View 1 (cartoon, helix red, strand yellow):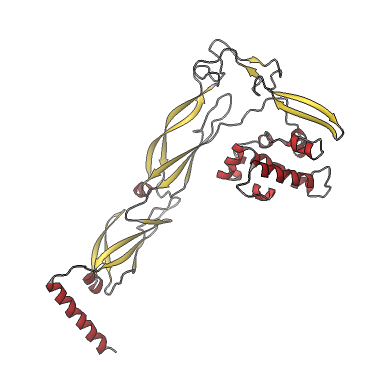
View 2 (cartoon, rainbow, N blue to C red):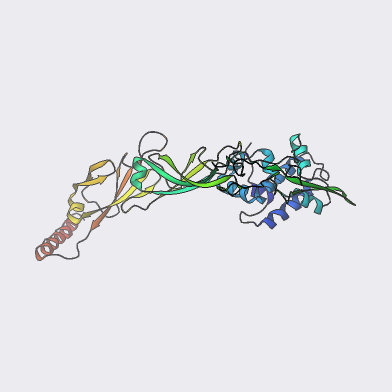
Length: 370
């Protein structure tokens, strides 16, 4: 089943603020909450609006969704990771329900989230790298080397963040869970609030002696040289995915991906439309009137273009299979040559005389054939 757009599910615009997202979800949650709405499709709708809210309220998830759609979310996050991070408890308290993140996940997916355990990302962040190439590069294909800054595991501490010879210790405040839980009984019911441990900041461990290289972060920023092969026929705004070349935070986490976004430089001669090429060709008045075969340089070499007798400005001559190569498959697009008849601005006496004679001849010819 094709997933519906998250923005449409919540009934908001793509430029909606976080407050707009929260207000829209609160309104829909009150309408479709399983404890209030007993309709057959209420639970499914509640699940959909909760997923949409969880993604769009989180800045990083929203950015991935805006760039890559559902594929950017489904390939990057587990179902549990999608829901983690959104402040469901605060919303449900405001509408009078003791029904939080853990309850949502348990009801819809048949298991608890393990909220007492520190959440770990499934993979590193993806990286976007924009590159500008020429039309010639796109025609022939290009192998190039990119210098990509990315996060990698600190080689000094091997990702622990601790000075070599030491190791992080379990946080005594949260017992290593990274979270603090508090329960409050009110007139509306029992509310459980879970917050990030302020001492270890959700890490579950404390580093007493930080690594001098990464200063306790466990990762460092490095610039890597990465080879990329750009296929011939590639078009503007195309995305190339290099799996595993994104950020790599270590700790058993898989590296993210590198997305290379192609931008085409403007060409002085050719205009590209898909796999077809368009260019102008200037010819003289005699060439247009009498017809002639003229040379034309293309990406495939020198060609000969036959100008038909009586050609006018704006006429188009099609050269089959002289356009851009097909990116996925065989063959080429076509080249369309747009004729422009160049009228001379300065004439010698002889040229003027000949043109005047030609004009008289053409008038006489038209009169004879009326």
